[in-house]
Image (tube, rainbow, N blue to C red; front, top):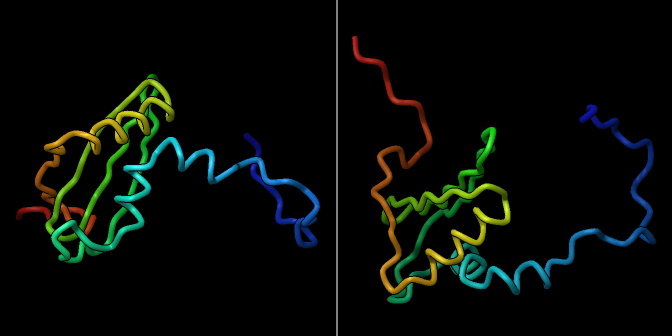
Length: 113
């Protein structure tokens, strides 16, 4: 893929969007609720939430993180669609398979001397 050039003018508002949020979010209702709802069911705040994806040669890994408590959910699939579907399926489980987040702030661990 070539590096994109900065457009000289603003985008034409008559050009339709290629992404239809309502259609996509209808398929990922649990992920949408997790990311958009700032509170857990019992009313305590979740803090920051983030979704990261990593592309490898033959797979895509998705990591969903929450600040409070420091937890992460790691899934993978052959494509982005499969990885997002795996996240949605995991969030639908009665007991979501969260893992303890050893690096909650996303900072590199300090080297030991």
